[in-house]
Each structure stands twice: as C-alpha cells, then as structure tokens.
Length: 141
Image 1 (cartoon, rainbow, N blue to C red):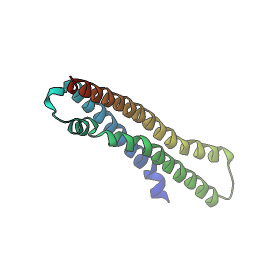
Image 2 (image 1 turned 90 degrees about the vertical axis):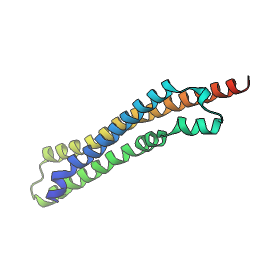
Image 3 (image 1 turned 135 degrees about the horizontal axis):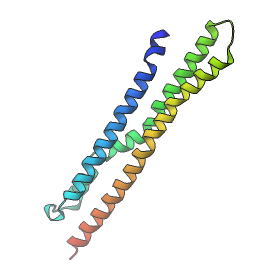
Image 4 (image 1 turned 180 degrees about the horizontal axis):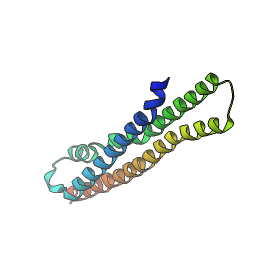
C-alpha cells in the first residue's frame, strides 16, 4: 500500500499530463493543416473528409476518458485514506478530511483536461463541416 501511496499522484498526473500534451499537439497540428489546405488539391469529398478528420478521434478519446483517469485517482486516494484509517486505532478527523480532499484533486485535474479537449474537438469538427461545405459548393460550380 505504501508503494501505491507513493506513486499514485505521479502516475495519475503523469497520464493526465500526457493527455493534455497530446490534446495541445493535435489542436495545433490540425489548425495549421486547416490553414494550409487547398481545396483544389482534392478530387473527391470523401478523401478530403478523411484528411480533415485525421487525429480528431484522439481528441474525442482524451475528452471522454480524462475524467475517468481522474476518477480512478480519486477512488484509489479514498481507498488509501480508508486503509490508513483502519491501520490507526485513533481516528483523527483532520487527517481523514485532508486525505479525502487530496484524493479529489485527481478528479478535478481530469475534468480540467477533458473540458478543453472537448471544446477543441467541437470547434475543429465545426471547421471540418465548413471546409466540406466549401468543397461541395466549389465542385457544384
């Protein structure tokens, strides 16, 4: 249990940090791609759509799973707090409340990663819809 207690925050916040970095990387890459796209380079709308939606699934995955990673950290943190309570015969409410409060920070971090990821995903999907509409309008001329 001591090993779990020692590495819980590092593991959970490490995973969430990687998820945040991936979100930022995909967002920057997609924005740069959308700015440089030339509709005349594409002959078919399906090929264009495949290029436009590349890597967007990653944003959806991060947005939907980051809260669960945070929740896992919270559940394990609460488990550790209850385990420590069971090991000590004297129950100190201050340490219990501190342990529970510290456990909740993982959920907060997961939500803090998920909200921007979903916002970025939705805005990029809107941009995909606009570019696809422009392509259809251009090919109908």
